[in-house]
Image (cartoon, rainbow, N blue to C red):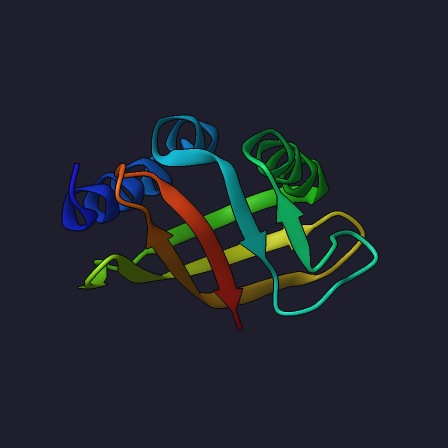
Amino acid sequence: MNTSKIAARLAELCRQGQFETAQKELYANDAISIEPHATPAFEKETHGLDAIIKKGHKFESMVEQMHSFTVSEPLVAGNSFAVIMGMDVTMKGHDRMNMSELCVYEVNKEGKIVSERFLM
């Protein structure tokens, strides 16, 4: 699968809320996930597909209610692509908030996502 097809598939699965399916289908086993900075909830870097999936479960456990979730059309350049993900969410113990992040992905020669980076 080329980068454009991977980008389209990731956007499609994320729009359906199928994040773990996207990770298992599209990510390399040694993928890395990079946050803007470390927080009490998450390290700055998460290494390996299993750890990335666990990170997703942890985030989901922190959500009280997801009011809406959007994913832009991907912008592809070479072996990288980016989407904007937007959330209207209430996190447990917090007020409702809108979050928007630029998500940048890198794809290897085998057609697997090897890195994701979230920028806010």
